[in-house]
Image 1 (cartoon, rainbow, N blue to C red):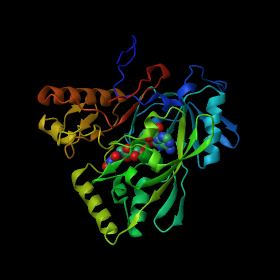
Image 2 (image 1 turned 60 degrees about the vertical axis):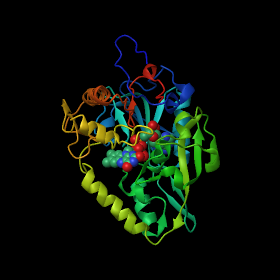
Image 3 (image 1 turned 60 degrees about the horizontal axis):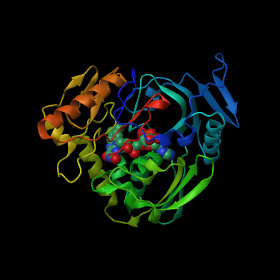
Length: 341
Ligand SMILES: Cc1cc2nc3c(=O)[nH]c(=O)nc-3n(C[C@H](O)[C@H](O)[C@H](O)COP(=O)(O)OP(=O)(O)OC[C@H]3O[C@@H](n4cnc5c(N)ncnc54)[C@H](O)[C@@H]3O)c2cc1C
């Protein structure tokens, strides 16, 4: 990956279309310097004041140029149209539990997705807003005696983020329960996509490469009846409590497990002697070596450096190149490069 002079080396960048694809122009500010907010079709855009560290589980990240929160699909489409009309790049954020934002912030608009609804279409078939909490959905469905989302109980993201990442654990993954995905495109059109036409993989979804995707709006899940779903969900959560640094500022697993090698990234990091290893205020967890902790005041550069060092040491020791699962959100448009395996 080539890097221009004076730029921070991008490690694991978000896919370009997640910035609104073709609308990634350099023109930005439309408000006067004094103006901090602007109302547009019932939306309140906040300029310059919103810190990304408040939108991410890692607690890292500087200010974004524009910020808007949406609570339904109409607001989401309006926000996207607004970005389009103002030639502004944007990113849709759920709970920021898989994102590393930069201390320099984001030179564009952050759209915070809070589209939170659950409709029961028929027993076991739920249409859910993409901003709904994935862990809450997992607990609810398991308690109601449906299997397929027990693993979601410990994942602190949104339904949209889970589908985008094809989040998974305990031998289950989001794609296994998806039936339909409703999206909005960059030109503001709503589309309904059938699961049969969607090709998911390990922590990958077709949405990561979809050129005209602006956002996932809602997801319909189809689940089966099960007498043991509630017990299983509890067991999975308990396993997490024991094996993960619960309560710390993390973004879950930093690296994907290496393909077809039968060894977890956490094991490689641990065996490279890196548990507890620190760069600045960023640290490899002593409990789970693939979880990196912001111990308080970690900068994005601390975290980037820690990731780079861990990769290098694992490569030196085992000859294995770890690939990031977390997404680094570059502050500037011209840094954006695809995150190819
Ligand atoms: C303690 C902890 C445990 C975790 N455990 C797991 C685990 O077991 N398994 C696992 O897979 N992950 C795990 N994660 C990672 C993370 O929770 C998941 O990847 C989650 O699905 C991300 O959801 P989010 O809403 O936070 O997405 P964000 O971090 O907000 O966004 C991630 C990506 O999804 C995109 N996105 C989000 N919402 C939308 C939308 N509506 N439309 C289009 N794109 C969207 C964003 O633009 C971004 O590119 C864990 C994280 C933590 C902190």
